[in-house]
Length: 178
Image (tube, rainbow, N blue to C red; front, side, top):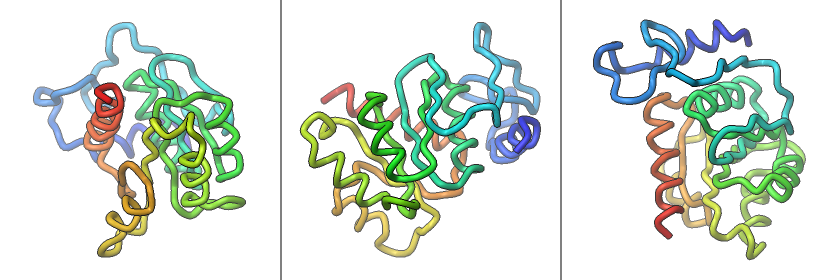
């Protein structure tokens, strides 16, 4: 997906006009780039690569477009991102990358999201790290089932960019307060 298509995808979901946006500027649509923010170039990173900036967030999602959207959004808000395209790779990156938060799709190749979460929660060093389920499956009771299974949160797909960032900040804030 080109950077411009991704910018358009983000801006179409922006619920605020430019003069009423409460947070840092988004990528286009009348918003200017935040002073000192680095340019985000999507589509240039492969899963497993990290961009250094702020708190570390691991994105485990087999859908390239979702992974890229989360990556660009999080980088724009100055988070460090690690990318994994399957559960096995995600588990390895979690262990080597020391993330502050993990976003994990439920249906993943090689090792499902539920198995990734259970493996990490079984390890004492990961019990304090929030693992958030991200899924397109939003049937009645799905959120509750995922939380009961051990996930620390739930984010449905598709996501509203501003709500997504607010929820990420909420999950990270909860961890900081614990």
